[in-house]
Amino acid sequence: MNDTAILYEPSTDTMRIELRRWPGAGAGDDLDLAGGEDAGEDLVIHYAPDGEPYAWEIEHASKHPEHIAAALAALRQAQGHRNAA
Image (cartoon, rainbow, N blue to C red; front, top):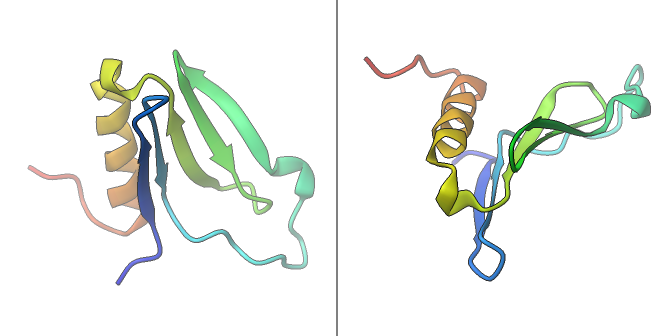
């Protein structure tokens, strides 16, 4: 079983795709690297303290299938899968 989640809130049409489990605090983690970054219209990519992407949050998800597809591709890559042919 994997440590990721795909969450959808219908009342706000928001989808969150977690690429991995939140990493535990470790030596060398830079807390300034944690946070979110606007990556497109209605898209925020959240980062963990290790500086790596943690989750994609898509607002108005039903209007952005391109963000959903990109987030799922990032999830596949995070889990070590190659892109589908």
